[in-house]
Image (cartoon, rainbow, N blue to C red; front, side, top):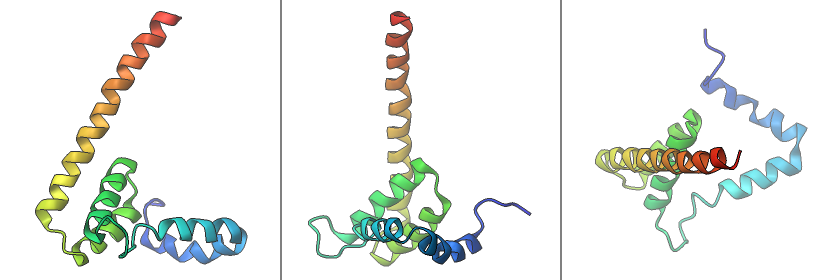
Length: 109
């Protein structure tokens, strides 16, 4: 049995709230901006952006929530697939540019 990425872990959120109520409240408020329906960015795009971030942070809980929300907001399977590759391209780009930074740092040492 794996101790990682168990959906039942989310049942511990009330315990986190009890242990750090102010911080939990702040997180919930911040997290709520993804699900806004009255922002300039439409809900579907907010969820696709959230998915792209979840792909790069590799959060399975975020993947679960935002895949479901994106589908409900009208996203297609094709859009989800494209977002995966957009996220991969940006992640790869960051690796390459950090490679350039490493060369600069190497030369400085």
